[in-house]
Amino acid sequence: MKLLEGKVAIITGASRGIGRGIATVFAQHGAHVAFTYSSSVEAAQALEKELNALGTKAKGYKSNAASFEESQKLVDQVVEDFGTVDVLINNAGITKDNLLMRITEEDFDKVIEVNLKSVFNMTKAVQRTMLKQRKGSIINMSSVVGVKGNAGQSNYAASKAGIIGFSKSIALELGSRNIRSNVIAPGFIETEMTAKLPEDVIKEWRQGIPLKRGGTAEDVANVCLFLATDLSAYVTGQVIHVDGGMLT
Image (tube, rainbow, N blue to C red; front, side, top):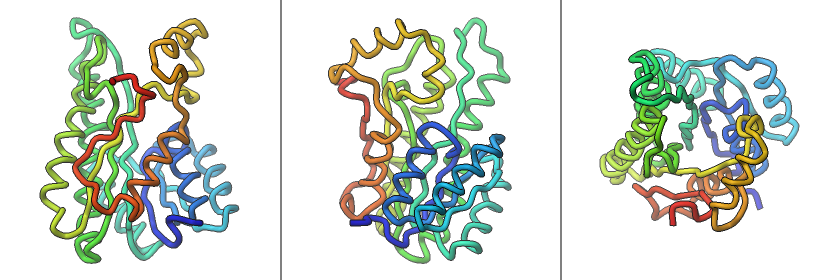
């Protein structure tokens, strides 16, 4: 059974990692996927081809979600190309880790801009379309780090904690129009990025997780699928931890 048959989803930062996993699962469930990427043109083209082969309409857009203007243009273009927007997944994110004494103002600002301001930009851009159809699901990607903090990641933690406060506020503002806003807080998810870490570090992390494994992009994508469909019609303003019990 295809749970998202004919729905249109925008996924930011989807050319690799978690975003790519979400785009794939959504297309498998019949969704038409508009996704953004910042620089990986080849990866984006490959994903577009893969998703179209699943029989849905998919298109990649080079867009900087940290830019208010570009976000507005992107959503206008997606509505023109796809007709509407039913689901928005704010997944674009970067890290620039350092201890407070070494972190630069530029590195702090950049992470807040890409991770947090992008959520405001994109949510504001899709709001008009969702209000018009009196329906929509907004899913914002936070992190366990946004819930408990992490040494050397004050900028990243601040951006991801900000996403939680923003999402809960939007849930209160738009709930009466049947627009839902929820947060996913992934834990240790094994992607191309974590594959570069030493094996002993990964082993140690796995040992500290009750389920004794790292998560997969698909683990996160499946929770996104739940939040995007009517299976979660009465769920809004929530933070769902996808972390194998890490923060239990």
